[in-house]
Length: 233
Image (cartoon, rainbow, N blue to C red; front, side, top):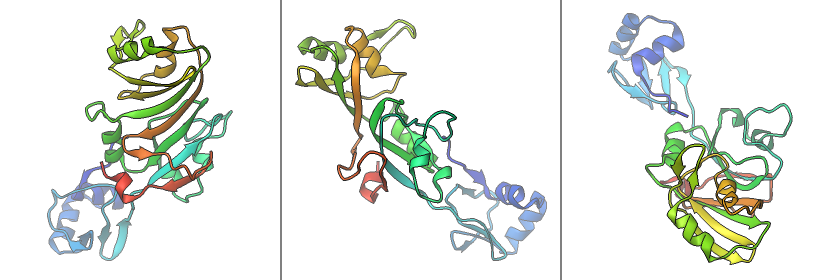
């Protein structure tokens, strides 16, 4: 989701219906405040978290929100769904409908899901240029061995897209369990990578995104706000 940045004069014009010429007069008279300071520059850029008031009337006052959710299996990563409970349904925050999902998990995947109303933050977190690792615990139907480690590190060819996945780290936990770290997020990527070995994934759980680790105190369906340290990228 893109951040909502705009020139100050355009924002006020759209918000109030006052034409831009008159908005400039209001600015010149010192009747507009941004984040508590008088604003006079028509070119000033504001975003969705700028506090803006006109002659003492608040036009915008939003606070950034960052949420960690322990997503259960059987809940969809969507804001609305006709058949299943959504992750938004699990939240109790009054502003939950202003949030968007950062890196979705499919219906049968559990674990760490992040939600925010800060488009710039989510874009940085999910951008392939930043190579933020996502760690998953994977349970397989059939035994796994060291040949998987080598194949994941080299990348696996997806014929439909005609691409080779970026190198992924795979660590064996036991004969049927592995930890996999991805720096990209293609459609059903982990299931398809193991599918090259004809080994079905029977359990998939996201443990972390970058340095943000799923809080062990959160049972499935529970959520909490991120700490300042977790938010910092």
